[in-house]
Length: 314
Image: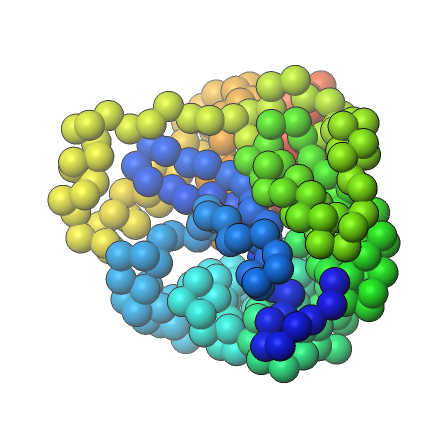
């Protein structure tokens, strides 16, 4: 895709979800913010919401990593909040600290790459961003964000067909009905239209499967019944810090219940989903290990569901 004037290709994939009382959703969305690309799409938040008071959240996370500079998940969450408040250079620095601490985490590297892309006002694909995406793919060839930006790199280089091939492969690995499917299809359709490439037949013929096996009703991406009116009103009346404590308490309570009933496979999946939502990737990986240890016969399913959530080690 050629650049025109001051426009440039932007890409965003967010992995995770927004937690609010009893409502947790997981997904990622793809958008390209430029005049000749698909319009931006709404995205879910993979960390505690920064919408209410982002500066307060930033201060809390700064204090957290200040007290423990080796807290990789704290650096990741700080990077996410910086990113969501358009402080991309600071986001990149935070994500880089996370990669320094846990160099084997593909999500950290692809997040770093995305932040570096957004931080650079001149180069649509800075060399250090490309290296970060390459590191992510070397660790996890299925990392959706890195795969998406691999397509962006091809597109920037004039290989529009190659870019679409990458995105079609990503779509093929997307579970049917996943939250991000619609946005990825829209990206393919509009890039094809811009470059006069017919994509309709390929879209119609593509067969989507889960990363490890076809899960007819994956818990990882399933909708969860929303909170009651009373719960919503109670949560809304709490200060932001207390809301976060409520959310954390609910997740910790779920983990405690699973220790008493480790055979609840759906519960383990929900715990992994919640941990990833909060940016606690290490705890999510730990939950996967515990779930498999308690339910060895369900290992294949657990790993498949965990892969939908990008749990490390899935």
